Image (cartoon, helix red, strand yellow):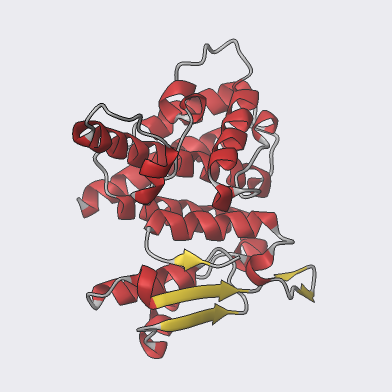
Length: 262
C-alpha cells in the first residue's frame, strides 16, 4: 500500500503541475482550488460509504437525511455538490461555476464549513478543471481516509517547493514537525501553535495520540495563530488569512482525528 500510495501521489502531482505550468496562474493561485478538489473527492468517497451503510441499515419508515450522515462524522453532500455529479457535467458548460455552486451548497448544509471552501474555480479555466476532476477521480474509492491526508500533505509540500521561500510560510517539513511532537509528547489537553500555517503540528499531534491507542478527538483540542504581512493576528485560527485557514482546516479534517476550534 505504501509503495502504491507514493506512486499515486507522484502521478496526481505530475498531472496537476503540468496543468499549472500551462496556465497563467501563479502556484499560490492554483494551489487552493486544487487542494479544494482533493478535499471534495475525499468528502465524496466518505459520503458514498456512509450512504451505502445507512441504506443497508434503513427500515424504510423514515427518510435518511443530513443529520444521519453528520452523526457518523461525514460531511453531508447535496446531490448537485457530489463529485460524481460534477464528472457528468458536459465539457461545453462552465464547470468552474458548477464547482463554485457545489462549494456553496456544501457550506449551506455544513455550518462548520462556512467560509472555508474555495470558490475561485472560474479563474482556473474549463479545460484544466475537467482534466483535474478526471485525474482526482482516479483516486481509488477504497482508499483510507489517512491516505487522502497523505496525498494532501504531499501536494502541500510540492506547492511549497514551487512557491519558494513564501511556501515555507505554511509548510514545515514533516520530519521536523514529527521531531517537535516527539519532544513535547502531546498526550492530552490543549495544543496552541502560534505559527500554525497549514496545521502540520495539529495533524502530527493527533497522530501521536492515535499511536498511543487514544482518541485524539476526545484527548486534545487545537488552537492557532498565524503571521500575515508582518502583523501577528490575534484571531484564533487566522480568520484574516483564508488561504492558510483553508489549508489548515482541510488538512486536519482529512486526517479525521482532531477538532479545530474557530
